[in-house]
Image (cartoon, rainbow, N blue to C red; front, side, top):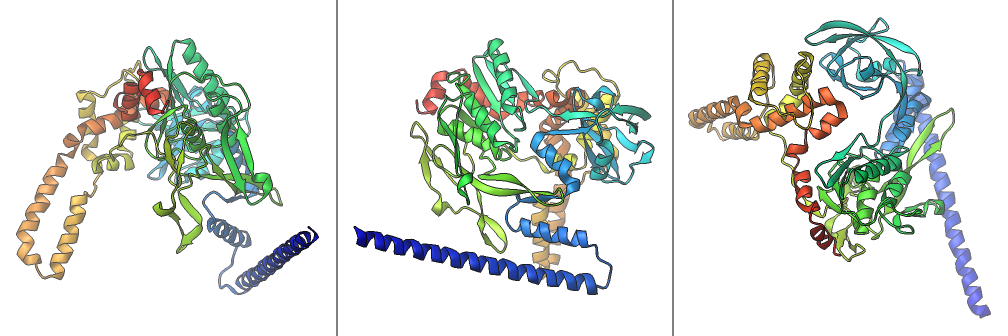
Length: 545
């Protein structure tokens, strides 16, 4: 026994020795490179031909260092503290509206319903000319934002130009703005409740709970939770939302980091609100982080059926570290694993190729099992139980969006004081579409089709092979036929463009509610869900029960 203890002690001392050498090596490497950096900075500051700005140089170096790790490890200066607070809490002091740049002008993109901008009468499309008599023309959206934000209770005067109406001066009193995590919920039919969750800031679980109970009170006997486009947020809110549908004591997510204090198991702490009602969750390629924890845990525990497309694939956890001079850093401190044991992280930032993170190779992906022994795969986000393909926008539709023509037309339509009673019942008819065609008559929205790109490539190869003159007539005929087809693209893609207009017009009138309800009649995910949700036995079968 003493002999074994002796060998054990020797192994322990050898291990500690290796650790000590590693610590010394790491310290030397850090010290050496900091010295090199200091020397390089000193030479640049002393000898560079033009005057340099020390703060900007150091910030560029800091950003470059962190960018080499992953996109989620970020430094925040003292001046950016407010931006970071908004990311974490969803609150800021301002007027309550998003803005966008169109040409050289910054315009109101969307006022938030019930907040100062909307209450003061600002509308989507209002061009911001001045704030408190200071011109905003030519400024960036970030510059205009600094003028719109400020202490709650203070009033600013916005000078705007409203299409179809002219110039207006509008007084807006700033407030603390806290956007809802659940901007919309309603019954879709006699039995189905629908909850749109867009964030995971403080109170997200409480908002989902309130919406769920209200819908249940109205008679909803099945539920849809829409996480599409939800980029995530606070981990504990994700755990609390899962707990609404899963019994107490179930593992939701496990985190593992470099240090033992980051190794945690997050379990449901309370009794569930409802463990029986059929539940469908929508996800897509922009559902990330906390959205993937909710959808992945509900899938692994076989509590919900997932519909849509593969999620983003972010299996990393960030924490905040305070730095000197009131600065701070958001840093990746752990990876998270779902109840089945899978890590959903899609890109491997620890093993880059030519400085770029690459997708986890199929050869190393593993298959895990849900509670009911259904197979799920790691390394590629959350895979929905039912995959629904979404077609890409046509080239003409993309061009109309990129050039803001659908948005601008909706603004003008709204400002001509047309009456809309309901976003859900509103449809763009042939008369409205013809108005849009007329609106486009003097607008630029040129685009290049895949066929045109292929033809360009053919012409270059023909010139290289000295066949350009031989093929000139044929190529000319093809070009004419392509242009003829493109001239009718507004008719070829009429249905798709009408849907875009419907969305923009509904949003101009009904804000977030309009954005959601305008898509109900052409949402393939929703069509599939409604096909299944009123057949609990089918959902149960798909979940392996």
